[in-house]
Image (cartoon, rainbow, N blue to C red; front, side):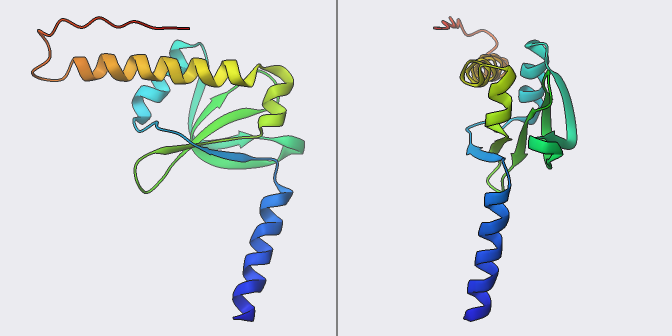
Length: 133
């Protein structure tokens, strides 16, 4: 029992030392996420390090390489969704992080919808996509 508590405390200490935050997302399609980032003019890397405060790095499946010293990363969960991993404080130094993340989410939603419409059986469907800012 004591051993478990000691391990738990060590893990908490490691978490607090890192500047990285992990946010749950509804992103499930890696290819559409990468295409969406490229559509926004963002360089994409796979299986790369996300840059954070003071040279800290964490590995992610997909990395959006941003201007400056900080990146956004996405790591796949067991359920197929992706978590967003970033040093949000650092990203905010050079970018409006809310605007940036919202634009990525919006582009992903549009591209995901367009991909779904192209699925077999929906080619002749009349679809109107309305995007609100």
